[in-house]
Length: 178
Image (cartoon, rainbow, N blue to C red):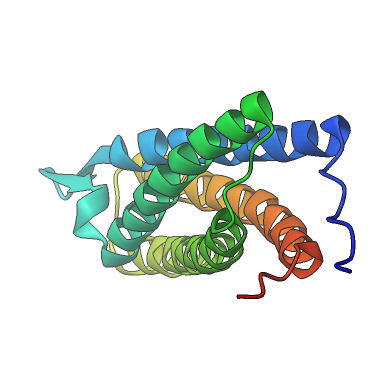
């Protein structure tokens, strides 16, 4: 006789998982908007230089990580809402959640780390090597970089918490014997 199937997650747990998915998506939307609008005009020795986020490779990587994470978060939101509404969980969703949460969370963590590192290093370098008429534009540009990296880090943390839940769900699912 086969053991009884595990009880479905409680409504409270499913609600927490849904809220974490929404929170992840919200952090990623704000990150994409902040980093993609990060542009500043620097005045250096009476010359204007327009600096954009895509002039910095790490900011491009950060944007790529946030967009990929956002696509994954939106897909997961639809799947989670569908499971919440119907109460039916596809057998492959356990593996999809497990592997997807792990891979995307690592991608978000590396994007955040790249953003923090380049913001610190380039800001110090710009201020040390170039004589600006005002440091406000440099501060504004790199402050947006820090803000984007921070939000990406928050998205990583919420996805890492979801990753723990997906690990637990995968370990508790019934084993299919053919």
